[in-house]
Amino acid sequence: MVDERTQPSLKIDLSFSPFRGLAMRRLLLSSALACVAGVAFSAAALASNAIIDPLTREPIQQTTTTSQQPKATAVPRQVVKFDGQYAPGTIVVSTKERRMYYVLGDGTAIRYGVGVGRPGFEWGGTMVVTQKREWPDWRPPAQMLQRRPDLPRYMKGGPDNPLGARALYLGSSLYRIHGSNEPETIGQAVSSGCIRMVNEDVIDLYSRAQVGTRVVVLR
View (cartoon, rainbow, N blue to C red):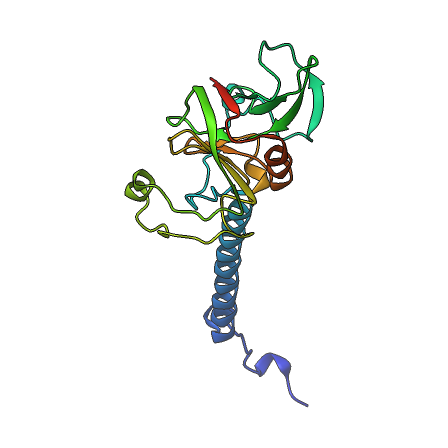
């Protein structure tokens, strides 16, 4: 019979076990991968929420200060009461409201949501429609190309064109009232001075306004 007290005891020190080291390395690797995945997800979420300017292809900076946020958002086209002293057929743009009014002459006007010039590109005054184009081509003006030399020099009219379905050219200026394939920018101050509308609205306005129509832009 073997006396257990005489047998040497076997003790294993797991603190130096290679298996424990391997487990620790796997744990650290898993944590690192989870952190990278979290950062990638956050970046993707931010990118998906960004509004892109269709003319410059740059993100539009969104402010978080309530007083600086747009006071109006895009609204359905509708006939509203209008008390302004303007002749029937006049187009009135309220930059502050981000709204356009086509005066009907009976105390009412058709109201449209519009996008207007971003800070530094606001303007006001009276213009006249000098040209009308369906599915207009786009040639960025020299001033815009100086700011963004990577922009195309020419883009044929069509659904992907940033000028949208219709354009009304104002006087001899670079400004236009035009459609947009980015409806989320309507109700925002985002453009380089042009007045943007959703394609459905600019088609409606195009059918009403003629060459010679007076356009009043209020700041």
